[in-house]
Length: 75
Length: 315
Image (cartoon, rainbow over all chains, first blue to last red; front, side, top):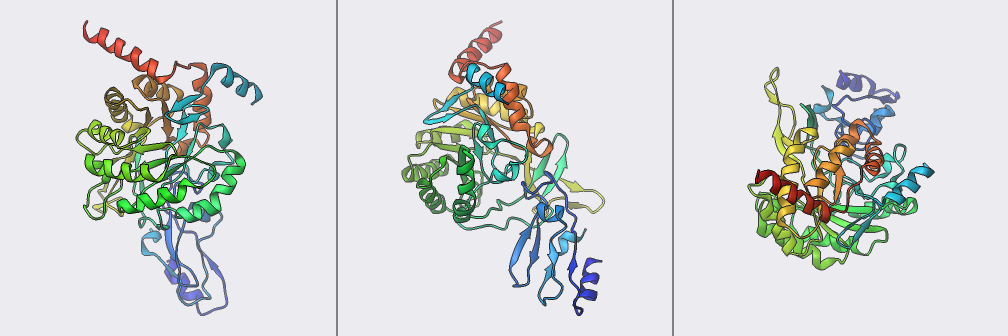
């Protein structure tokens, strides 16, 4: 669903933020249990963790061409 | 707060782990406390005996793909994959603030090769504010495919190589996933460790019967939490019997009573890990609990425990 959203939003000037669910332990960014792999606008793979979620980040900048969302994080 | 400090000093919670002097026996378990700073809103970090930070490697590591954790009965499995920002980023980005807060920092380190361990130790040796190092030998030796800590000779080799790089207090953290942990502990002691901490996680697995797949992307992970406390207790007791150097006990500690159990079994200090995820202030809570039921220093409790078991066993 999030991939569909991304496909929809990509050709437009709209910015898009997604919240990705994953099992959590500490819930405040310390344990790295819920980290999700993302590729940012520079194509750099980073690990976005729980703190990002709490702030509703893991922002996928849909304006840039090479952002991806790792499959495992969608469930 | 103020009266708490006065009482703690009066009771005398200070412990000595070889050359390392701690204000109290409560430490954090590596991997459960980030770089310490994540817990600032919940804990006055300078009040803890020590903060053992997330395991540091030469280069930053992204860790394993998700899912990385799963709750189990009385604990959890984790396969984080030793994700960390790398030693350089830790020194540059985290240490200044930790120094400013007056935290007793123990740097947990690991490597994929013995040379990695050596290089990380060498880099940390000159950093102001590092009170000591804890060497994680539970990670796999990429060349041999088994954990460094699974083989006494490898454990001794890592310890020796790290020992040469630093005069800082050196703690070696053992994995329970071995046949005889005292063998490994003995080797590390002989190779120059100042203290032994145990246990690390117990290798485990969980399967989802709906999907018929492992719940962890990595398939296996490390079990931690109250479920492993009896295993940790047994290993602490065995190791304390066999070794001369101090033992630091870890494994499922949630309360001051748990901590005292480990002290009675022969530990001089404890590490609290998984419990931090349920109560981020657990370290301070345990420290407060401990001060009311304090026991004499570990070498004396060791003697008392010996006498107790001897009497009991001789009927």
